[in-house]
Amino acid sequence: MLTKQQLSEIKELQNKCEQFEPLKLKLNWDMLASREDDKRNDFLHYENGKLVGFLGIYGFGNKVELCGMVDPEYRRKGIFTKLFNKASDEIKSRHFRLILLNAPASSLSAKGFLANIPHQQHMTEYQMKWEGDKAEVEESGVTLRKSTESDVELEITLEVACFGFLPEEAREFNQQVKSEGSDEFYIVESEGVSVGKLRVGRTGGEAWIYGFAVLPDYQGKGIGRKALKLTVAKEVKEGYPVFLEVEAKNANALRLYESCGFQTFHAQEYYELLQ
Image (cartoon, one colour):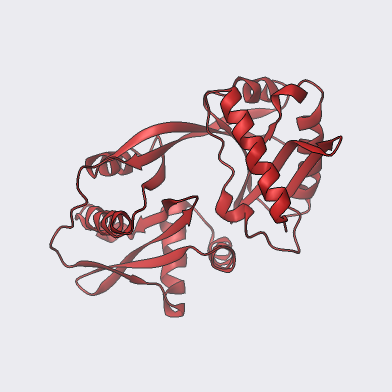
């Protein structure tokens, strides 16, 4: 578990790196602040008592993502390679089907590192912010309610059907995200039938929507649009700017989000590490 001092040092390093290059690092702050004690997920490198390098491991069921940074003044010294090797040793002791290195699309330093390791491009992810004029709610039979223990099997079914998890991976991931952090979990209902899910994480004064999914048999009926508008209206009313992420290749979801007032402001690249 990271200490408050370490979290502060990581944030300071992130700010310095983002000022040096026009990029936005995806460090998953909700996860950083709620790490489990029994797993080593964070690797820090100090020079003369100053944090100059960081690499985090983020597990998402069947896959693991790595994201890190090095102080611009300390680059080309092999620091990131050392952190990467340590993280790789840790990852080998776990069971992940997919290992991804996350890098901002505009990061030249990330591309330089990738040139020296076996990899292939996996996907591009757009980070989007709601820029609508007014958070409107459509009158409909779609509602949101807080998830309960009895909804776990539905949530697992949705992870398998919509995000490619295996059942046991989905169950483990469900337990993980609910035990870490303070995200709020919601079930989407249409005419009283539970058909979808999403969760909302609030960090740094922002609200992020994650894991938004509707059962395949209920897709294309406007349920997702109505549920999204309900969520946006709720968060905007409470004073939060609203964000979400979507794969660039998911054209249907991208069109839905854009039609509801979301605009892309940044892109993240994901590269699959080849063993």
